[in-house]
Image (cartoon, rainbow, N blue to C red; front, top):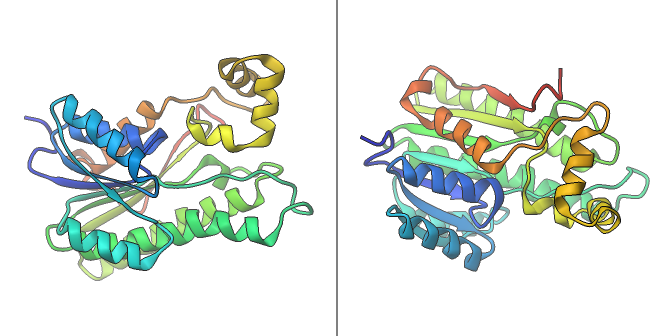
Length: 256
């Protein structure tokens, strides 16, 4: 029997990248998945892929930075067993060149979104118990030039999850809360970064750009979204029922 048979899951950022991979992986293991994303058409496309493969999924528009959007979404979804918060954005600029607007935008999506995901996730999950997994980043563990907003937001997500996990333990709420911190993952997020586009233009293909980034000193190979989704499924499973307040670093040794 599939390990998530009879369980309901909600995935944010489900339109692409890690969120889409997590949706497909959870559905393949029997979960009925709510695919949520700010890009409603992208969420609907992921749900279509799940259904075509024989799984169960529904799409729902969700702005992770907006509390009213969370309230509406959770009223539609009802009790769930699993929540995977994969929605996030990047940004790359030296601190002296970064605008306050860009700083706040990155933190609104990455940190405010995680706060709301955990707030409404715990409320929904406490009915039946379950697991919340948020996608943080190895950039929240190891500093990188130009990543002040992204790194600080992801470092905060790691500690936020630990606090929420502790609150659930001390409050006897049957919800486990963990994070995963990947290093580079091949997702559409990279295309939004000017330096990456410059590399693609110089080298000719995205594959070549990924290879050069992954082979630079101190870097690691790029993971596939499916590799991260496999770890998400583990943390959400009964096999990980003793794991909470933990950050699972998946980085091919990048942070060692």
